[in-house]
Each structure stands twice: as structure tokens, then as C-alpha cells.
Image (cartoon, rainbow over all chains, first blue to last red; front, side, top):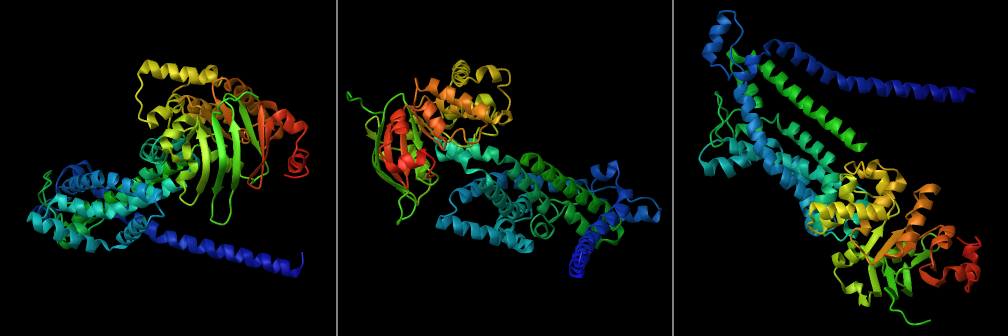
Length: 287
Length: 255
């Protein structure tokens, strides 16, 4: 081996070490966040934390004075989050899938290109703006904050993600699949419903899970729409709480600050679980 | 030769992908009922393009133009609705393409589902058995009908696709190099199957494999650069081609 070769190999090794180091550095914040939330929030997790609504500041203060753990939990937030997510999913999933199917089949149409561009814009729209718009569109005409308004905001945020994942998944399906369906005499709509969409199910479902995990932690749009509520409620036309809203409320109330970590841990674990499920499904589907 | 109405007839059929060039140039040929006709020629000669014109696959791609006439039982299919044509003209692709989310059973019946045709349970069972028997797959899969079609071997998958096409009782079956992705044994099975099937359906098969064309077809076409150079009885075409280009291709001097 001559000197230049040695030199080149050494450089190569140095580069490798360099990129490994930076890769490790990017993992640091993530692990630090996980660790911090886990350490601080672990103690608060108990059965009642998930079944009890938020305590009043007075009750919390009394408990702190007596040196006891703060009573109550985040059940009102969990129920609000699930209720609003559920309503948003019911609307956003069919709408997003149909739109994605259109975009993948007619990608050359002028109209499809415009819609595709708007989808990108929507995806890039700051969530706080979506919140204020929903306030104008839904909260003002309905004369009040409500779970419906919150779910509209979340639905708008989920749409571009579902549209994109549907479109991309359909586009990577082999053309032979669609052609085989059409060759049997099916019309385009039937081939889409019976052949293409079922074949793309894994990718679309993964996209939906990722969309849910994207919006589940959204706080800003819910401040303008769902507002918050300190007790458990199932009404869709009344203000309602959500886990990220609770975290914000806890932060603003010195007596409740202890609860931040339990709520954060719940949110973090939930999103983590959704992501892992999405990854697992994507992998299984690719096989 | 006494005049038999051909089941399929190309009349000056042209296909072009761009305005400047034609992939298939003025092909005229009449295909007889219940025969196997092989379309041969080097890569890019337009044989698949010609085949895909018959079930109006080109309609999916707005840039592609098909001119001239293609008559199915005397009717010009170029002016018919694609979904009507495709019910009467089945197609089997190069790569076996069973629908991945459907069971073997549902794959055979896919044509009915895609056409919105409702069948009773008994009709379904009978159709599945009939079609799988006609492709000699019944004995191999009768106990696993609810398994996904993609679990089968390549050759079995291709036979499943043939069964799926046959279920619609087409007049013509188009096959685009159906064995090029299969091993020799699976290929042999399919060839034997096609010889059997020509009693029910007229087969038009694109093949790269000259041996295959000679083994199974009664008529052969040789295409070169988009033109139909020679069309006639397979035996004559192989033993005594009239065109110099056919001779060169068959003897391996061009390809």
C-alpha cells in the first residue's frame, strides 16, 4: 500500500467518525427529553391520573400544603382529545383518501396540480393560523367554543398528510395491478376501490397514524376552538379539554405545575406508540 | 381456403406514442377463431404495443394514438367503450399479477366484482372450480382457496391470472410474454395449458421465445420496427420464410 492510498483511507475513516459523531449528537436531545419527562412524570402515573378530572387549584394547594400528592388527573383532557380526534378522523380519512386517489390518478390535470399545490400550502400553514381561521368559521357562527370547532381545526391539519400518503402509496403500486384490473373490464372507480386502495391500505393506514400523531399534540389551534374544560364532558357543542391544553393550563397555575409531567409523559408515550405501530405496519406491508 | 369470418382483424392498425414516430405501422392481419397466434420480433418492434391495442389499454395514456381499425367479430373496437371491449378480450401480463389483497377464490372472481356482477354462492363456487380446473390449478389449491394468491409460486400465480381472465369467458385472450418470468417447468405447464385452451378461446401471444412460438402456435407474425413483416402458418414461417428479415431473425443473425 503506498502512502497516498493510506492517506485516502485515513481520510475516509475520519469522515466516518465525523458523521457518526454528528448522528449521535442529534439523538442527544431526543433521549434527554424522553429521560427528563420519564423521570419527572413517572411518579404521577397512577390509575386515578387517567380516570379523574383535573383538580381545582384550591384542592391542589391543600394537598401540597399537607405534603400529599396532588389529587385528580387528566381524564377530562384524554376524553376531549379522543373525542376531537375521533371526529376529525371520521371526516379527514375518507376526504383525504378520495382526494389522494384523485391526485394520483389525474396528476397531469391542471386542476389536480392546483389542488396538489394547495395541499402543500396547507401542510405548511402554521397551526395557530388554522386555529384563528377555525375560530372565525366555526366558533363565531356557533356562538361558542366547542369540541366540534376543535375537531374542525385538527381535521384541516390532518388532511394534507392523509392526502399525500394516499397519493404517494398509490403512485408506487405497480402499474400492472391497475392494468390487470382494467383489463378485466372494471371501470376506473371500481378498480380503485377494489384493487388499488386495498393494495395501498398499509401505506394509507400508516399515513393516518402519522397524521394523528402529528395533531394530537397541537395546542395553539385548540386554544381558539376547544378552549378547555375542567371536568369530564362528552358534549360536542360545548368547550372541551385536551391533553396539550391541560399542559398549558398546568404551566400557568403554580399549584398545578406538578401535573405537567404526567400529562407530558402520557402524550409522549401515546405518540411514540402510534409511531411504532405505524413503522411496524409499514414494514409488514412492505414484505 | 374457404372464407371464414376472422374473430379478430387488424386493418391498417397504427399506434404512435409521439407525433413523429409510429410504434406500429399499418398492420393488417386476420386472426382465426380458436387458434394460437404468436407475435414475434426483437425488443422494441411493437409487438406488445400491437397486443395492448386490442383491449384498448392505450386509452389509459392520453398521449398514445391508435389509428386504423381493429375488428372483433366484425365490429371496430376502436369506437367501442373500453369496458365493453375488455370484458370480451382478456389479458395476461408478463409478470403474474394476482390481486395481492384478494384470496385465490376472490382472484378468480375478480372480474365479476369489478364489473359489478352479483353471483350466488353456488355460481361462485362453480365458476371458481371450473376456471381453476381449466388451468390445471384446482388440485393444487382446492384446500387453500382462502389463502392469498400471492402465496403461490410464479407459475401457479400466472395460471391463476389465466383463470381470472377465463372466468369472464372472453372471445380473445391476449398474452404478453406470459412465461418470460417463469422457470422452464412452469413454462412447459403453461404451454400445455394454452394448447388445451385454444378449444375455448382464441389466443394471441407475444413471445420472445422462438421455440415457444413453434411449439404452440399455428400461425405466427414476425414484426420488425413496427411493421408486420410476415404472417402465416407457423411451420411455413419457420421452415421457409419469404422475407429476408424474418430469415435473419429466425437464424439468430438479427435480434
